[in-house]
Amino acid sequence: MRYMATYDLMETFRNTNQWLGASALAMASYPAFSMFPNPTLEWMAAWGEVTERTFSRMVMKPDWNIPPFVGANGQDRLVTTETVVEGDFGDLIHFRVQGRTDKKRRVLLVAPMSGHYATLLRSTVISLLPDCDVYITDWHNARDIPVSAGKFDIEDYTLYLVDYLRELGPETHVIAVCQPAPLALAATAYLAEEDPDAQPRSLTLIGGPIDPNAAATDVTDFGRRVTMGQLEESMIQRVGFKYKGVGRMVYPGLLQLASFISMNGETHMDAFKNQISRVMRDEAHEHDKHNKFYDEYLAVMDMTAEFYLSTVERIFKAGEIASNNFTVAGKKVDIGKITTVAVKTVEGSEDDISAPGQCVAALDLLTGLPDSKKANHVEEGAGHYGIFAGKSWRNNIRPLVLNFIDANEGKPAAKPAKKTKAA
Image (tube, rainbow, N blue to C red; front, side, top):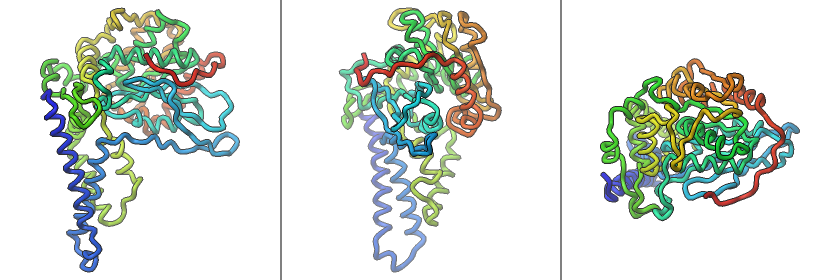
């Protein structure tokens, strides 16, 4: 599987289907056909529209499109994005609220690198902006990173977080969502020993696999079942000539998407059949529920091979975080050294990706932290997505997280420095 031809074959299949959809739409939309209305042509046009949109979104990074919100004085607050720290594999992004002068809670959202862009947390960002000064990790698509930039594994990811926290200063409150939860915990422990003054005030871990073996899911079962050799042979491919990262070994986004869809194939098939019917009846629109969801869901990114393989091997198989045996650049990171950073874990009772028990395991590792600085919340009836972006997040979890941040707020922070280059 580790050949450019395999990677390019997937891209060829995607490109061909995008072209077929566009061609079907154009052909069925000839003005002359309007003289003789035909349900077959209407179906063909609807199929073409949905198909073209579907396959084009797979290689498109979504825009943030953060809407303005009404400030305390009744004026609209426009939101723009600015890059604070640039790096080869990711940037630190700041959501700047125009006209804001009062100090807000400084929050760093650590976005997952698990196949989707950081825009997966768009609704989380929108919900936090009225009350927080929000920053986010914006990871790059590995296919667009030249081989000359070198490797990027879970240790590099952790060091990127360390750099971001040093940049933002000690008044920062970290919210890590899903996959990066164990690495955010490791980055905080690293700072506890190497640079205590740069530690964040609080750390909220949402639905993350701190101890994957604490509660079995299909994800953890897969990690135990498959050998590293099988993973490398079946999942890793070399980026083709079309992209800047030509030759880089990656876990392709299109291959990840195929895995995502196969888990609920019938549900996705019904969703697309229903959308074609809605387009035929002229009931669909640009920002309807289907398009809003699938424009994000289908926008996938490649992960570097070393990041994917090291995540499976060290987090899921060896359980290095769960056993407090994680190392960064040859140095053991002791989670027990965290003594001042308040830590809260959030889980969903119906989470089938990071089941309840996996994330709360972090609290047992914090042997140096007093119980008064530990907290846990299990949201009843919430699945994985709901605990950071759904109704459960908006109505229940978000207020609890903000209260936790307020309870551990420090003195007013100095404004972080502007654009710098990540190491």
